[in-house]
Length: 165
Image 1: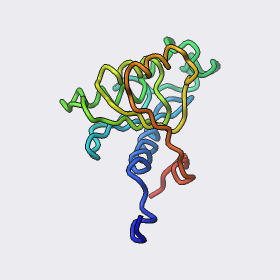
Image 2 (image 1 turned 60 degrees about the vertical axis):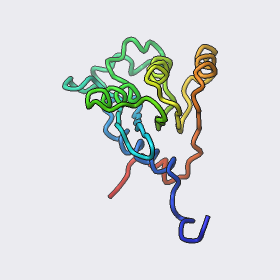
Image 3 (image 1 turned 135 degrees about the vertical axis):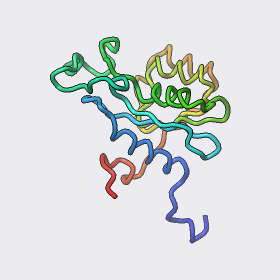
Image 4 (image 1 turned 90 degrees about the horizontal axis):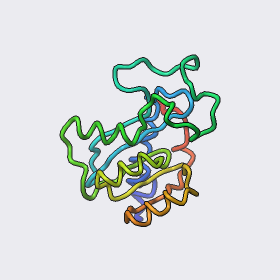
């Protein structure tokens, strides 16, 4: 790397920083997740987790999963995951995501979202935090899918919970 670019962040860091900012829009009271779909270095869509569009946001009073462990009884959650919202937004706007597309997500997809990613034709997932990575069925799906999986070892500036301008 030449001297001029030594302080320049990588494209993976760049898109992950955007996913972190997107996560700040999340309306989930338990965990804020952001996702960005990128093709040929261009953002196709973004998504964050929360109640369906136009519905009341979750609160500590209305969250039926607030006292459950992460991943426990997901069917009770009224929220839509960031990865699903990212795919939905592309579909709503008529943007094809099939092909050489990368999903940048702050947390690795759950089983349901992983299956959506595979069926959508996304080729690569870059993530910060793992989620249920020891699940054997998930491992089998990943192996069979041929998805490229990249855990992003991030610098401190990416882990800040809020971005200031």
